[in-house]
Image (cartoon, rainbow, N blue to C red; front, side):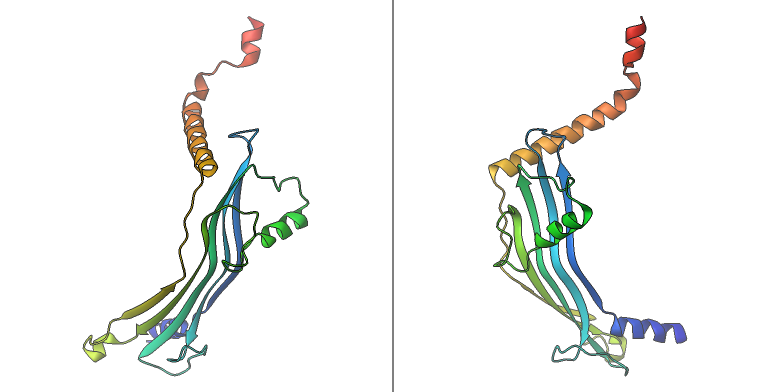
Length: 192
């Protein structure tokens, strides 16, 4: 049908490209004298249709196999203790600062970031069998090969302490929100 052909054409030529992602949480209230921030950065993620030789292409004809190449570049997780807040910066300065802190690869990672997961690169090669039934399922529907760089995980004592304090503070806020309705307002106490 027309809808199935349209879906097949979209799957054949679907491309994804996202660049410069930096999600950060800054906390000044858990430990007022010891602010911290943690976040995730990603240089880029991409997914492209390719030839069987893994060269980018646009498929026009109906092929039994579709090749996709996916890349994840410099995915990292960090936790900075005694962090300086970006809330005092002008909007453009804050955006530029966030962009500067995105690692390009493990060798070009910012030195003032304390990584929990050092920048990680992943490359995936995916082969989709579009009509496996016609081949009597001799070939898998999805054949995926994933190449990972070195995975480096590390958490120091200060990061661990901040994490425990944050969890404890969140637990405190949860309990407080449950019982806040029983809290006597200050102005009522003063009138008595």
